[in-house]
Length: 160
Length: 130
Image (cartoon, rainbow over all chains, first blue to last red; front, side):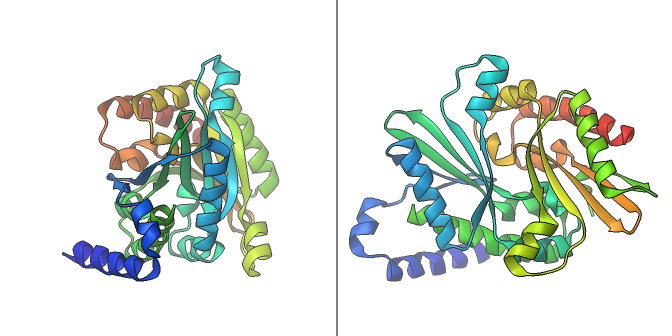
């Protein structure tokens, strides 16, 4: 029930702040599986990466780590993976609060956002949903922080 | 509280020496350190707070990472596996590794569980050797 109310509020908020043409461009498109938000985006890989970085920046999250998993694995194992980038996103204020609530939460930080190349014209962007992954720790204080971060991530993903 | 990590505490030790030892131990289990975040430095620079010595190492064993990606393409949202080295009080350094079984429990995929178990074994050996 809480979730429905939250989603409704968020949807109303997004409708209010989004110009009509943007809504038409990205009608639904955001998948929310158990542990991540995901969206298929048309466009060139590097441009999508830039857009992801810009959208998360709008939500006050900066990139603190960047990993090209395809390069790492292709070099080490001789595989032929398509582009697969893992960005570590961090908002220092939330990270600080989370580490005060749970000293070892650094084990789940920074929060990851993936950009995967499907073909030359399509990529899939997926962001972890910390509200769902950190729930397993059973720390109510941490849950509150994770919930806020998930709201930021959801918004960044919807705006993408 | 359910533990989501495996950890040990080293007393009478210097932070950077423990850090080096952890990196070596990871290497001998086939993990390379792909990312290293200096939390103390980042927090000081970004929000001007004093924080204890705290490093987040992102470790990756390419064989396991590849297997994990093959069975769950979104698993990159949980990679690389993190190891935290932090100074809990002067002279006491805690080393913790994520328990992949616990952290990947949100993912319903039986193939992934087998891989997570193998990785957990390796990370446990790393923690024991520090």
